[in-house]
Image 1 (cartoon, rainbow, N blue to C red):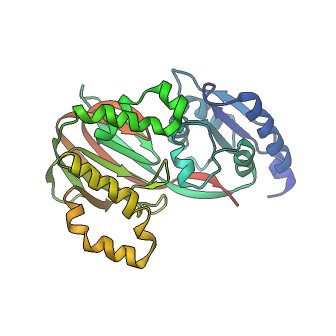
Image 2: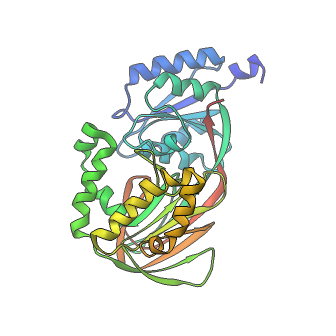
Image 3: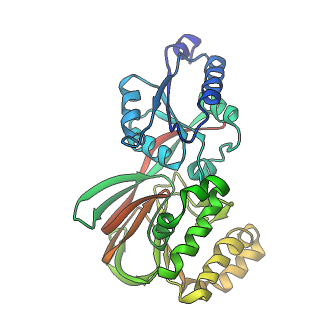
Length: 327
């Protein structure tokens, strides 16, 4: 791209005013924009009524060549939803509690300047979007996207019980408090599910998680085979029985996925205990999954709660989003 072409393109920043230091962000974007030779950036603020989708559409209507999402996971998800299949790239300035997609893309979490430099001078990478078609408790059908993970059951209840004030104080560790609040009220529930159009299977579960990528805060590799660009969703069906079952799941995602999988000896140890692990956590893979619930259950996408749902269909929209990553 020539210098003249760069000057004729501009970025737009969609920012959450609650999450960002606007003065620092403006100064950083101005410096990165000038260094890269881009035109003047446009700015769009999110609100309670528009968490980012409408602002992003305004940016697209204004001819933006890139939309920078500056906020938490909710802002990133909203911007991505509006950019789906548009061909316009998204950059991220992580400013939230979880910063889930930023972690999975190895983007810098603690430096605004490093993030804006990647936005204006990084490389493009095509990734998948997860798409969730949900039937709400009231019977309405809605479609939303997710970038990292969707959850039905305890996972969504944990999100609902996590205190916003605690998130501001201790960051992602506030979710531990959310788990403690949700567990005493959690009850297994019956579902029927089908992966990739296969025959429905019944199950009694505490949660079912569907991932587009697998890294969680704390560098926890929840689903280590999940990839952002493989056109596949990775699924975990959680069926623990009591505290011991939850401890088995915790050991699997922290010790086995985080430590043992890194060596050949460790992988042999995992294989030797795989059958006992599967009784509490079954992992599946496929381009889509349908879930029908006997009774409505809580549902979440990328840490945002969406209330009670009766049915969910989730699929991978391969290569639907272009993101900026380090060169």
